[in-house]
Image 1: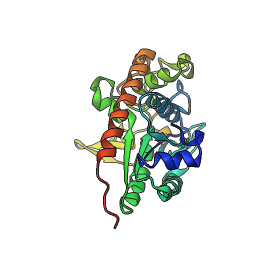
Image 2: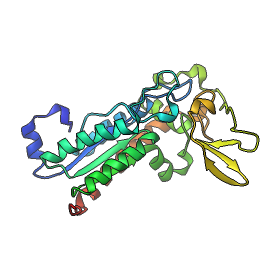
Image 3: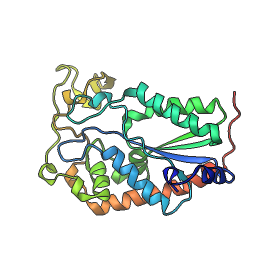
Image 4: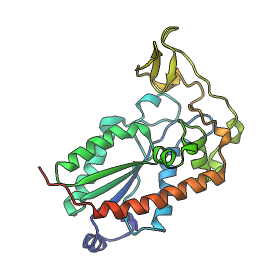
Length: 257
C-alpha cells in the first residue's frame, strides 16, 4: 500500500492496526561506465514493488537523492550531503511521527546514506520510536555470500538487470577495474577510501574519481552479472523484508526520554 495513493482517512485506519512505515532511500550517482545513475534508487524501488505483493506495510515515496560526498564530481552525480539527507529524513519522519507512526523502516540503496540514517534513528529513539535501516546490498551478501560485491560490480549490476536489463550499457560491461593514484608508494590504495601501511588499513578520505578510474570497484566483475541473478536476489530481499516487517511490528517500542 502506497502512502501517495491513499487518503488521510485511510492512513488513520491503517494506524489502528500498524504503526510501521517503509521509506526507500537511494541516490543519483556514478556506478561505472555501464550502469544507470539511478541504480541506488531503482533497485530499492523494485524491491518495494515486490514487497507490496507480499506485505500490507505502508510504503512512503522514495527519497531519490543521497549523500554522495566521495563520488561528487563524477558526471551526473547529485550530492545533497550528509547534512542535507539528515535534514530531509528528519522532516519526513517527524511528520509521520506526528500522526502516530512509531516504527520506521528505511530501505537503503546507497552506502553514503548509512550515517545520516543512523543519526535519524537516534533522533527517533529518543522520542519512543524505532528506525531500522535495511542496506539491501550488504544484506544480500550476508544471506548469500556468493553474491557479496563492491560498488558497481557484479552484485549491483545484477540487481539493476533485475529491474530492467536495458539500464545496463553492455558496451562497457567488460571494462576491468581501473585503480588510480595511490597516496604514495608507501601508502597504496587498497579499498574504498583506504590505504595500507605495514599490514594495517588506514582511512584517507578522497573523492573516488581519484582512485577508481572507471567508476566501479570490487572483486565481483560486472560481466558476471545476469538478469536471472538479479531477479532472484531482489525477490529474496522482498521476501526477507516481508518477514522482517512482521517481527519488527511485534517488538515493543522504547520509552521516550
